[in-house]
Image 1 (spheres, one colour):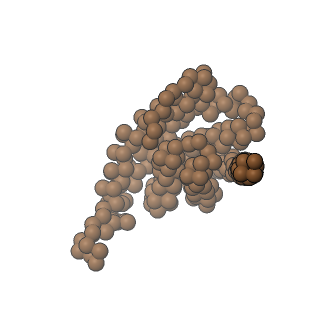
Image 2 (cartoon, one colour; image 1 turned 60 degrees about the vertical axis):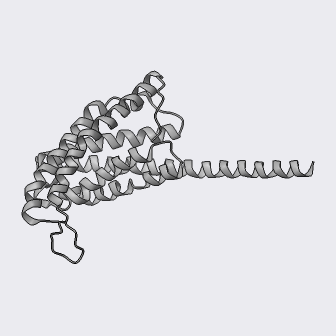
Image 3 (cartoon, rainbow, N blue to C red; image 1 turned 90 degrees about the vertical axis):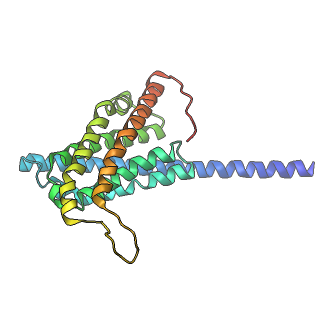
Length: 241
């Protein structure tokens, strides 16, 4: 009897520990999603006020860039959430989405000031803002076990238009950056040098644009499957990554 009682005690302690970890994770995720919803709402209000006051999108990026960089970079926590297993999302899918956004913010729009007034920048900013407010508010209500239908509907319907529009905005922004990158040779490393390696940021950006071609359909159809699963209860057998 003694061994079985000890085993039972250990199992009970492990169960309690898992519940405690689960509770802490839920509290953190709730805080995180509320904070991110609020952050993107602040961005939306700032963008609306700027346009109403100025009557143009020129200068908009400069006025919101600090807030944008903070909250978009803060999204790196989502990779930790996946890696730790506290959310059931593919690390690969999340990694691609988060890293591409951070790349657009830090290494394209922030680094090349000449393109900050491009209409394509406004396009992806508007798309990102609507998408993130919808996404994070959906996650928040989901954690609270009560998702209003209009939030669920917006989460799994708006992306049908917003996702392609965002990709177009990002690609046009990268394309607009190419002449400046080529002229300045920014982030490039030419031979000869002490590292004996060569890197051309101009061609790297062209490669990034080409990378959108096979990647976009995969992510888009993934979201379509999620839409059918959540809204219509269809079940799909996903292949392991």
